[in-house]
Image (cartoon, rainbow, N blue to C red; front, side):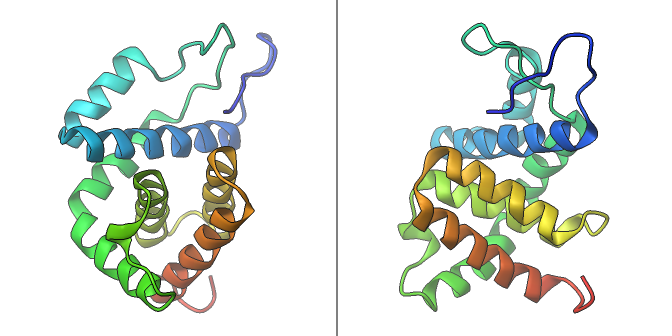
Length: 161
């Protein structure tokens, strides 16, 4: 989790983006498990979760625009993203449908950002999703996320990125 700094300090844009990515993964996971539409999950998160204390700890408020863009973008591009990610996973002997739902949410969010957010350097995106993964899983899963998102980057970004 991304813990807020002391009250007198303003969270950096990088910290707010990292918090938005974590929240987006959680929202996409919830959406997949509940069948809710992205707009409903976004509204719930914005009214009840984002920037709220967790276990009494102040949290960095996520960048709301980035959070909404990722969750909404994953919903709109889910089929394209799933197909691309699935092809990379099948080369490794598995498929997106056989993955743990949280790992799938991480790949979908990271894949969407690499596909749509060309204003952010790919290593920044990939590193943040590796950090999200390492908060929930062991090193093997983090390596898998790195490898698959690197393949997505190669497929959707120019060679100079």
